[in-house]
Length: 100
Image (cartoon, rainbow, N blue to C red; front, side, top):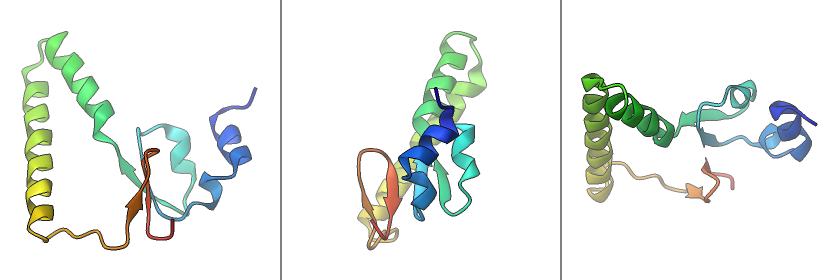
């Protein structure tokens, strides 16, 4: 059985990818230096929800509110044309590139 990076290398997608990969902060992704990295906030949201609901950590609630605020601000600026991502296409796997 191949480990994470070996499997990704064998699939030969990420070793060739030169765009921005949006991912869940899994350590092997960072071994690909030819691409830029962006972190998906869904895992952050789940961890913050756990910390707030299960551990009663109030700071986690505030961090979730901050994520919502940031998302709303980005959406507002995109609608106003201030954050235009010209030439970028995306597909469900979460990889964003101008060259796709």
